[in-house]
Image 1 (spheres, rainbow, N blue to C red):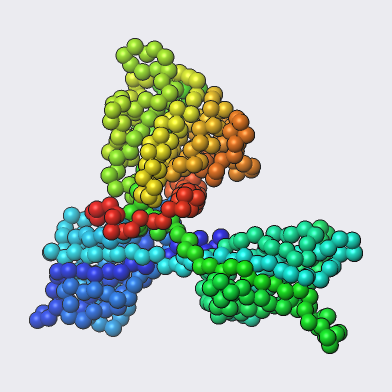
Image 2 (cartoon, rainbow, N blue to C red):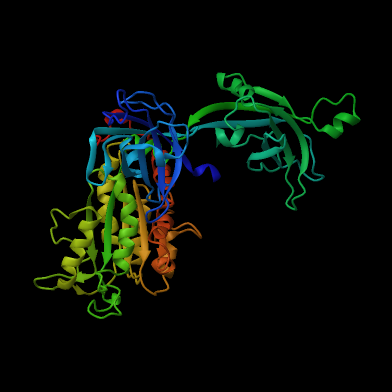
Length: 536
């Protein structure tokens, strides 16, 4: 889906800018830069220059592509422009701010003090940034039927289907939708379908559309029954309860026969405009994304004191578990206002008595309050408890999935799109309770939850790939299929030598669609921003 990349427009205003001009106020302009690694920044856009204003509201909006799965570091800089050159090097710097696009969209509007450099405020100057998604989120829902279509098959009737084309700017026809085939029927009714308006007619209700009705042949040589042209503004007349009917015309037949009327008639039974909400509609409406972590402390990881163990800490205090946690957590934390993350371990024996293995213990050893402050808090808790645990077994995933599911189920009872949960499981992949886990995932697919599994170490991860269900639909032990795809699995070794951000990109890319698919399945609209979380 090429139109999946959301574009965000930022509106900027400032108050109490420094006055750099003698005898008058500054002439400010704001520039937007995006980090392109280490200390390099690329300019994306700039506003107009405002004359003599210490509290400007810029009308020129700043556009940026939005990617949920990456941390997009931005810098906004305000300059006093006193010359005609576009180079900012010779203009006075009035202050700036560094933040992530995730922080802006999660707050929708945020105000920050301007700084001349880290730790040095630019007087009382402040900047306010408001984000808005640019997207036509309308979809068109249509239902068609036909009457008396020409018979194309020697034996039996035709097997008709419809294809819809929009006229491109170059005049060529582009296929935008194909219906299913209705077998052996000259007066078929096709199933209702919906297509994003942007795809269907480039959001232009008067753009020319062509509809072909053809007879399906399994060898791919489909025969044209007839065609007609129309536009959405015409189809919409069916929305007011009066069906719209088109003659299906076969150009060859029309040429040959003077008395030719049509090869059947196609009728629009219904036409409706729907709103298709996007991930950003939910986030900007105030939907919170709650992040939970589960870490595998089973014996198959190897003795943590041995350098061969997956839990062995390098002299820098790192290992694959922590690197994976940092990469994914770093992105998700921007969408969680309180930054308090419950973190659990499984498969270890705990002090003081080291009795049976525990399959869901609070990483900070505080079962009534398993929350860690930020990703740093989870890493700190991990380093604290690691020396006190005895790695054990078996490797059971279902207890932690069921635990987070029960919290998600409570949230789902509010019948609002206000909370969504992401569970990150870090494991060496030797799963024992595969059947119980399959059942837990099928139940969880009805809840506001996505599960990300990162496989650490050299195992073959066959079972994990089965849970991901990308190659086929995951079913429970009694044959019930998942309501929607909620598991994403990646082996860490594929990303071991890649930049840290690439693991997060891979595992988080599906979360926005999973969130939208859940709320769509429940028929829940985004919360109204008025009831959104308090602005920071």
